[in-house]
Image (cartoon, rainbow over all chains, first blue to last red; front, side, top):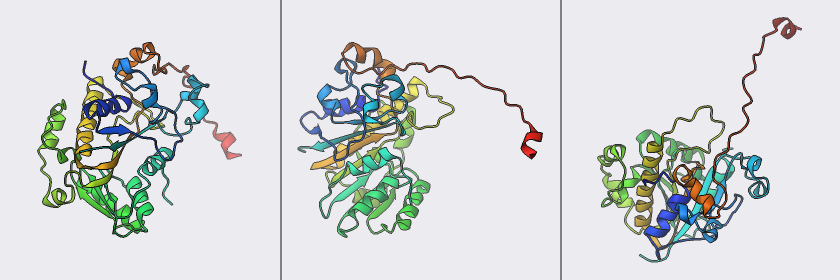
Length: 88
Length: 218
């Protein structure tokens, strides 16, 4: 199946393609909510998802408990991941 | 004052802290909001340098203008280049669009500025489906286009890893909310993850407004 995935799907790609080289790391400023979890769907583990940030407009209307808590509803949609290259 | 979306500021901050003398690459810099903000964060240190690439001369000119406006033209080096070409051997599943882009060779100046493993930090604010931008009156994306975009982003990621020094950091960001739910959303739920399914909002509909000139005149 060709992958249409941006964001989490491409983070998965980096982690798999450069396993042991590219590592997800925590970000200095966190205002977004965690990424989407779903290893079977080619997305992230819960641990990995906690290291990326997602801003999802409209999410609060759908899921007031999980996403609205982070108050990302009043912004554009956005996604941020930070990696460190650990070796050549 | 330069207004930026909050997440853009968070993304620029994600590259910090930068050591003195750092070399930073912004792979898709135009119009230059994040690059100039980063340059201002680095401005106390004249030995730092930020190479700002974008695909066309017109986009590079915009980065140049913004750099001058913010007085960071000594740090920011805007250059025209398709950043996917920084890593040549790759032949990703990209389609025709990508092969056309491939034909523009890098200039000697770009090749000199962007050597393998030469950057302490790389910002990849990738061209994306921009499904997160609001307000949006019309969305006209096809699955195939989304797939080509995701592949283009992976080509950019290859280039980013290629030019990054060991120990350096890469910040990858987009202004879209698409995680691949178009092909894998159901799987995400089945795997016990958070929901990525798109639900329908109630349709508000159109309401006919009748102009009342007499009321306006009063």
